[in-house]
Image 1 (cartoon, rainbow, N blue to C red):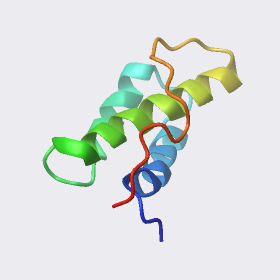
Image 2: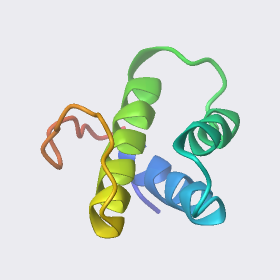
Image 3: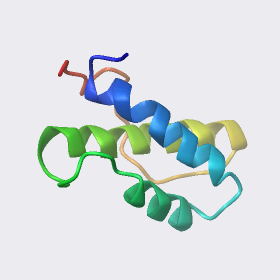
Image 4: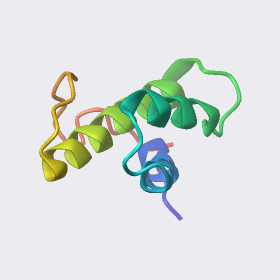
Length: 82
């Protein structure tokens, strides 16, 4: 089991993105909002969740040749253990 918020968020986000492959970005983001697993959308867990969503959507868009408007964040830049 992962010991970081990002490690816990990544497979959930990847699953939602995979389940909604081919859907418009707006619908994918709505599904991701509904999938948030930690209650209140505040503090560090939520920031990591949002960062991981943007990272995975950029990666998915790059593979599919689409463009998403998101600020670049280096992998691991916002990584802190639980």
